[in-house]
Amino acid sequence: MDRASGTEDGEGSSILIPLNEARRERIGMPVTFHRRELDQILRLYGKMVAANEWRDYAIDHLPDRAVFSIFRRTSETPLYSITKNPALARRQGIWSITSASGLILKRGQELAAVLSVFDSKLKLVKA
Image 1 (cartoon, one colour):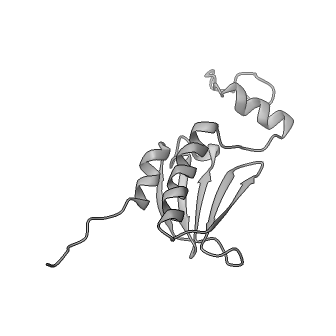
Image 2 (spheres, rainbow, N blue to C red; image 1 turned 60 degrees about the vertical axis):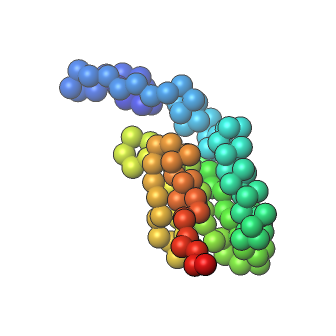
């Protein structure tokens, strides 16, 4: 199926795309975070603010992706970026976390699994 016209391609197979994706392409709406996704991200952000690790954030809704950027200080570049990119949903995963250096720390389909990269590791305590 041709995405624009809705006709079958030359091989006789059809391709189905989600309705919200088709509307977004037609209207040009930006990709956004859903309420539950934003709740998970802000819960992690609150923990890290309480631990005095992070201090500011920014949310960008772009035509092809949504980005939640995390800052240590407002005047710096983002420490981490949590990106929702629906175009990569079937390949590498809709979610990715990128560090300030551009290194992709984790990718995946589930937000909770991707955010687990920020879970605190157990530390050895000497008595």
